[in-house]
Image (cartoon, rainbow, N blue to C red):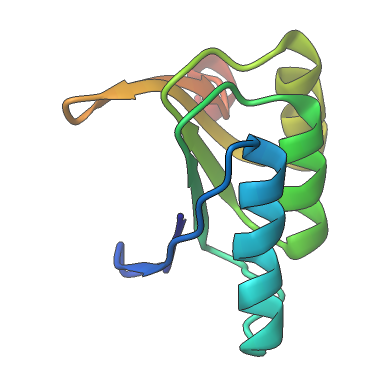
Length: 105
């Protein structure tokens, strides 16, 4: 799911594999001429791995929200590139990984 800067879901794509679903939704945005996706958010229904972070960085996506834990490599890569990272998103609540609260002070 790709959400625009106004918080509106614009593109939704599904696949058995989370990587394929992300490829499909970013590809749809590319075909529609929306790349780079600055200030857009990628929402995924699974774990956030470093590969998803890499794809998001390449597409210019600013934030990733997932329902499961991010890997340590995903956190490191997202931190290096300034990507906002939220995980364990359920019922309107998520754990905010990046930017860290300490770095925001």
